[in-house]
Amino acid sequence: MLTILGIESSCDDTAAAVVQGTPGQARVLSSEVFTQTAIHADFGGVVPEIAARAHVEKLDVVIAQALSRAGVALAELDGIAVTAGPGLIGGVLSGVMCAKGLSAATGLPLVGVNHLAGHALTPRLTDGIGFPYLMLLVSGGHCQFLLVRGHADYTRVGGTIDDAPGEAFDKIARLLGLPQPGGPAIELCAAQGDASAVPLPRPLLDRAGCDMSFSGLKTAVLRARNAAVAAHGGLRAVDQANLATAFQLAISDILAEKSRRALAAHPVTAFAVAGGVAANGQIRQALQAVCTTLDTEFMAPPLALCTDNGAMIAYAGLERLAHGEYDDLTLSARPRWPLDATSPAMLGSGKKGAKA
Ligand code: KG4
Ligand code: ZN
Image (cartoon, rainbow, N blue to C red):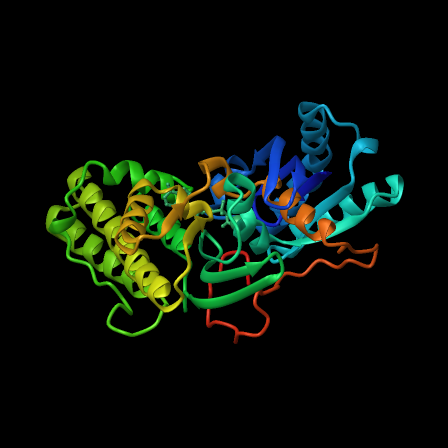
């Protein structure tokens, strides 16, 4: 049994957690997240330099909290796992330097973790799911289908060719005058609207395969909003709600249809979703429905483990360490780090934070 501290600082959440167990059978002893949302609110997006500085200020605090909530002393740990990429370089560096300091001071193994592997292995932490499984990773910085065959064996079988869906949610929220982060704000607003009032396209559904595109959808919402503003001299609440509802439905339709195709092309017994956008109720429901018709088990981690957190990093580190894999003090921070190095780089694959 291993007890691992996980540190995450690749975007706008400073997080630390303690996870204990073995591969496929682990539990979260503590998981602390300090979110920088309020710090970046005035800027309409994450400012990398401000994020890095805030990580430096908060890392030791969240780590101390995670250890104390878990009731575990530093000396009782078996390893220190840290996100070594992909992400905003300043933030990733802050975490890696902090983890190196802890490792040097304690002599504990340092385990560099790919942030995407953290998301992709989460269903093994929450449900003990076995390999292989298909994963839809869908967040503010990434959107891809991954065939997960082992803790270090990932094949990307499709993904976005431009924006990530979370990025689209955030931009559309701004366009509709809703607060950031856009996903939860749009979901709330969408509960009041009528999707049929605003016909929107479903880009790339006419093309075979599992690749997706969200940038044309964004332009279509912009046009529909401008038309509504021109017709009524401003954005009425009813138009705001209809636009939010239609946009959410379009994203949900695209993700569901492409998931159906990914599962048809790569039949596995379980389909899992992770990343911030997986918190969306309508999207979860649509994916669940696809799995029900294909007789595939559907897994969505609890919301707190869908968005960025330290537990997923601790768990991915646990899987590496259990296989005898760890790093030394030469571990470097990587702003770009595709999980599947064999597949060609995608055009955009989510621009926020220069993810994989
Ligand atoms: O995984 P995450 O915490 O951070 C990374 O991007 O790595 O995901 C954050 C993204 C944001 O773009 C946010 O708007 C989106 O996830 N999000 C949602 C919801 N909650 C968060 N999108 C749609 N519906 C939600 N309920
Ligand atoms: Zn993430």
